Length: 111
Image: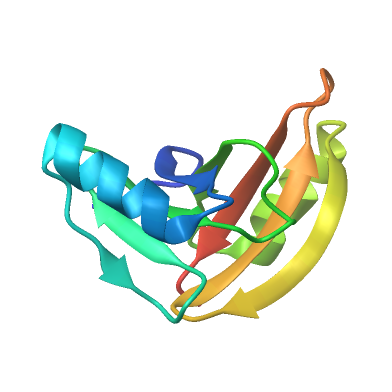
């Protein structure tokens, strides 16, 4: 069961999605679920995905929230800087933020 504020997903940049999929499949036996031509999800101990999207230039840890707006308010109250306001994607919604050290993370919800 997903829990508020816990790591839930890891998004990794992939400049060449086909090459990334081929490498991880050959090296580790991973399999993928494609969501269009620019996203491939994996479930290999930790769920995650590869994307060439410029919004994910580094590995992006993604936490879960049942109430996305409430979690965004908590992040802001704690001093986090919102870098991408809440937006929809296939499967849910999320926002991105930077912590006090400048690390970028995201929080997602199915709702």
